[in-house]
Image (cartoon, rainbow, N blue to C red; front, side, top):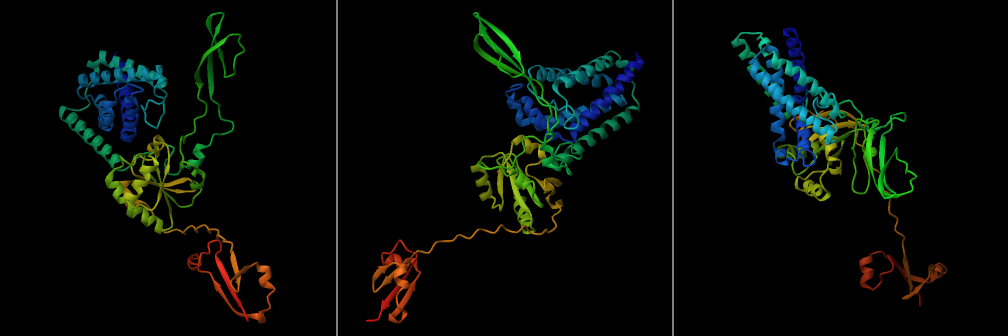
Length: 436
């Protein structure tokens, strides 16, 4: 029993530390996942959504500390009871998500190791078994240090966890596991290979045959049934290939500019998923930063899921010299864990990404300014009124006049003056007076 307990102790401790550290590296991302769980569509406890970040930090710090406490043998009973309570809750949560198909990714290992709810539920069941072993053999969990050593190690671990969590919240995750990490190309992340697995769906058709409802299952084709159609239900058997970059766009209400801007050489992208909730201190710093970037030759755009009216008001209120385009809120939250967050791109490849606290760290060497597109000259057709001795004539008549018979000729192109004379259908006038 002793050896089984020690093996379980190492496995559970290491797994809790890894799982907690991955989330501690990105507590804001974990808070987004908690908001998804708290939403009306899942657990229906939306009153907790405003506290998601606070809960996120508490959970991930506690998760790491429990793993450390278990390995060093600090307060074994408290640690094991806490582990048991946490794993029971997580097991229920992942089962609920999997069975009712509420959440596609449990978020247990953040973006580092995406797990489906069923995979996460299986992992939690295994952990539950290991923790039950620890629970029954808690007397075999011996401390590695003296009481003073355990207290110091625990305190230092707590301080280190809080410090690291604060650091990544004030800056950006130290390790970026997402598809928008520096060095990745956004356009390439959206491509679905030709040989990629296709989605597989199952369609259950219900028909009333001879007065009774009968189900017919197909892969999508309409069944040939001699009966009255009642309804159809679809079920995803295999989601197929899932590209790393999803729901990303740079568009207006009328036009998609995604490909255009992802081919820009020097692009600065300002990401704020909701302009109303963007951090005010960060917004204040945007004006000077974006003006400098534009002055140095960069193309600057903004991305937000806010409405058009809100975007325009935000631009005017903050005197910004760039336009905001539409992008999915979840995609923007995935791009950068900061609002506002700033990215520098070269033809769609992310070369730098910073939190608004670190705008001064953005490398902005002057670049060759992109030439302004030549605006096509608007050619206005000249409509001339010809007057000979006060009478209007066609140009063909005027061309036949002998120059020696002309006493004077004046050209008027002042349309205001012409309107005062009651002439509105012409934009210039030639008056000719002949010799008597």
